[in-house]
Image 1 (cartoon, one colour):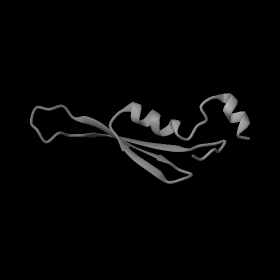
Image 2 (cartoon, one colour):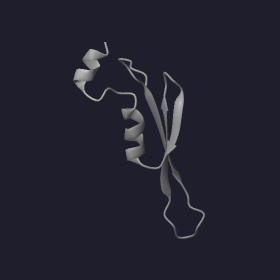
Image 3 (tube, one colour):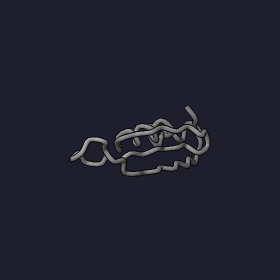
Image 4 (cartoon, helix red, strand yellow):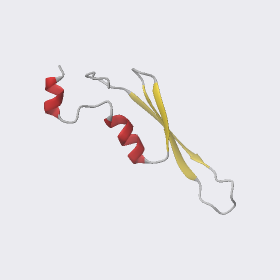
Length: 67
């Protein structure tokens, strides 16, 4: 896991139509951590939160320790 003071993420969102007639379109997203070029395609906000959390210290106290 990378511990830096600043993280930059790009989140791209789009609506993806369904192939089955009558089904609602679905939101899709791609999140990228710029310093590492790591990308993940996701279907929910929880997946975005999980991706970002992997790059952040668990608590502010942990951030102080990692300096």
